[in-house]
Length: 234
Image 1: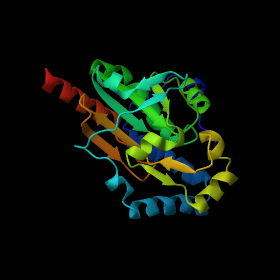
Image 2: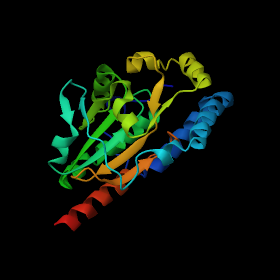
Image 3: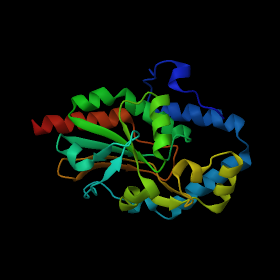
Image 4: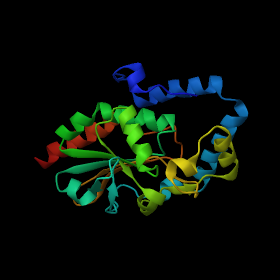
């Protein structure tokens, strides 16, 4: 299934809640994707939930590990430098091949200017290669940096990494989701989606982690949290 880029569909202006956009997307997928294929994805999510991966990941009140990663252009980006300017919003995503990651990034891009006005920086982190990150940022006209977390080294420090089960690997191969190519290694590892709001001292103000890749925190709720935190610090 081919998901339209912003260039093909016009400027992004969908202000509906992300959960509503995703519900529509899931309904579309259910019309075109066979039930046995959907069942593989459902079993994967259920297996991850059984492992309590999200519950065991870095949570609110914890200390966010510092990182320094290249962005889509190869420029090094350090969390310490971003936090020196204000709070930091970090989204861990799977990659440009995931329609729900694309949907979240487009929605976060819609609030990027307001996020900056709330004195916070916004970045996304994925294991995809720099070339894939560049294509994603360019295709979807994202205004924030997409950082390249080779081998999921940073995601692992946040407790987010899992290995794609064999039956889902087989399915991805048959549908041309070539993770070894997209990520530049053959580990078949991905992070579960996660969104963090990090205070200037590294404390985690908010952690939205979920084994279900079709569920993500609402961007406007993240923005509201940032604005409230800014007002408290005045």
